[in-house]
Structure formats: structure tokens, C-alpha cells
Length: 315
Image 1 (tube, helix red, strand yellow):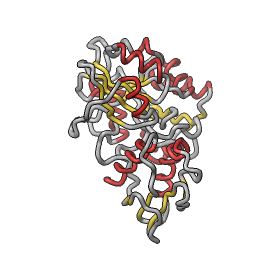
Image 2: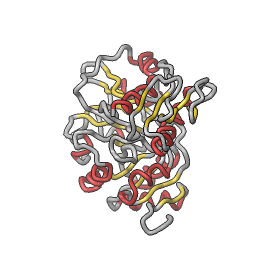
Image 3: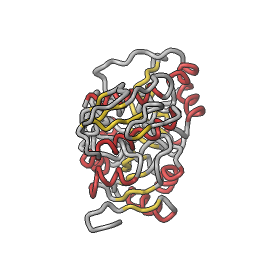
């Protein structure tokens, strides 16, 4: 912690994790690294703690939260699992997959977590720091991205401090996030169908291989984070598919389009995904009033990258 108005930041070591767990048990909110982005965690069974998340982020109350759990056993105390859910958990948990499942009446979660919906979004994260915090607190943790609502998601501890400041009780610094994009979200329906609610690190093709073809998602339905049309905003106009930039544009490059910074000179999509939000933060902090982004292939992980960029450009 530096300066009386700075956010308290601790390494994600044993002492930091112990302090984070204690704060969470007492109703605090803590920014914790995951393999996707930094999450703003609070105990999911406390109305007051969950309300602090919404207040800190300026998040609309109709936008539900993802609940992070330490094990499948804990998840099955919160949501109704069928064979498909167990198959997905066995294949992708712990990892960057969120499942939207029917909420159990016995779950005892805060009502605001689901935004009044009969479903709950659950994920078992893979990052060792978040796993350790979950285990030490022995609580399911609601944890949306640790930034102001609608802004660029944080992939480093300083992104959290810049966005939220003293609104968060503690930031655990676990270094940069490996994946750099929020989790893939799938909804499993009682009629045997499923829907892809948000693109992410787990590609749609992988899910189709296990579940078959998905159903269409109603445009107006908000069942999970990341479905708002305007999201991930860097606070400046964003122009997509720009091989070159105008003098007043910060150019985010890819491959041979060098740019002011490049998501991946070699065109590796995993590298591009991990650098995306940091690039948007750099662009937001630059002197140029506008942002241009080089074309990104739409296949595989590129679908998730382009989804985030399209929403950033719509803001």
C-alpha cells in the first residue's frame, strides 16, 4: 500500500490469502486474480456483501453475478446438476467455463446474485490464488470483474486500483492473468437444449463436440455477465478492422499490422487474448482521443476477442 488514499495491495501469498479470507468472512470485498481476469469477490450468501459489489462497480441490478466455488460438491449444493453439467465440469473444471444452471431453493445465496432469476452462474476457477481464497474462506464467492461496470476488465492488480480505488478493501496481486478474457458461459436448459451466452477461452466448437448444436439466444435476455451490448469501454471511440490508424488514433495491432502496441506479432490467438485488455487500458491512457484496432481472425478464440471488441466499439 502506497499513500493514505491508495488501495491496499498485498502479494497473493499465504499471508495475503489469509487476510483476504478473513475480510471476506466479515463481509468485505476483495479483488482476487483468476486465470481469466481479476474478480471482485464477496461472500455470495450475504445480501450486504453482494450489495457492496454492485455499489463499488456501479453495476446495474438486473445484471447477475458469477459465483465461484471450490469444488463440484460445493456447486451441487447451489445448483441442480444433470449429466451434461457433470460432463462439462469433468472436462473443463477447474477452468474458464461458467455454467448457468437451475438454482436450488436450498442454496441460501443472496437474492441479488441471480438478479431475481431462477438460474445461477457457477464456475470453479483454476488460478491457485483464487482456489486458495475459496478454500480458506470456505464460502461460495460472487466475483464479477474488478472494475467499474461497463469498463475494460482488469488483467493486472494496478488496473483494479485505478478503476476502483478505495472502494475495494484489498487487492491480491497475483501478477498478470494468463487467459486475459472472461470465461465462456453456457446455459443448460431443462428441455435438453443449451445456449452459448458468452464467448470465451473455451471455444464453441469444443462445446458442440460434447453437447451438439446450441439453441439461439434471445437478444433481450440478460442471464449472465457480458451480455450487455455496450461493455468493455475504454472511454474513447473504437474503430475496428483498421489496418492503419489516423494521426488521432492509438492503433492496437495484430500480426503484420504493427500498431502502437501489438496483441501478437506472430498472430498467436492465445497471446492476443491475454494482451487484449492491457492494450485497451494502454489505449485509454494514451494521448490520442480515438482507438483503432487491426483485424482479428474470427475463428476459435478470435470469436471471443471480436465479441469483446464489438461491445467496446458500441460503447
